[in-house]
Amino acid sequence: MNWIRTLGRYTLSGLQHLGRYGLFLYTTLIWTFSSPLKVGRVIEQMSFIGVKSTLIVMLTGAFTGMVLGLQGFYALSKFGGESMLGPTVALSLVRELGPVIAGLMITGRAGSALTSEIGIMRITEQIDALEVMALNPYRYLCICQARIFFMASTSL
Image 1 (cartoon, rainbow, N blue to C red):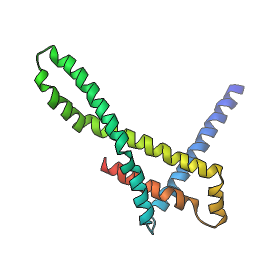
Image 2: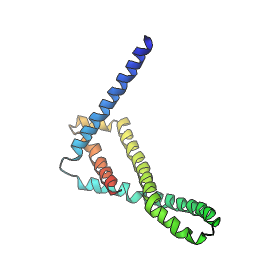
Image 3: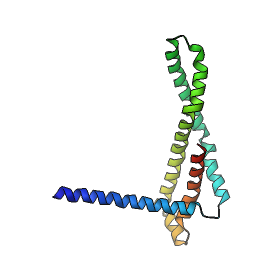
Image 4: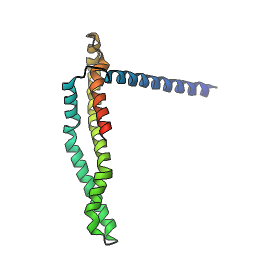
């Protein structure tokens, strides 16, 4: 009988967490599509997420292309098709692998940076200070990040 209580406790705890995540998503979406749009903050976030991520995307793409070329040469040399290595690597990187790797690198870099920034703001009680000053922390923290990620996900 004790295992039923334990199972019920874990189930209710999971549903409670899911409900909190749902409310957070709902609040974020409401504040994301409300006006006014802070253009300066959006441009700053676009620069941080897009422009400053180009180096890691280019490095990852270059090394992926090198590995793909090496493995492709090994496979194509068995059949005498070494001349098709360049177009094969170029097409596979541009069409298939490039957008996926770019998306993963941008999401990993920018997502971890934004998450750590919000975590540091929570530790240093800056979010509490926003609430004391009667500012909405959802509007301040989530609006620019959600809009940028929304624009980035629709462009991929």
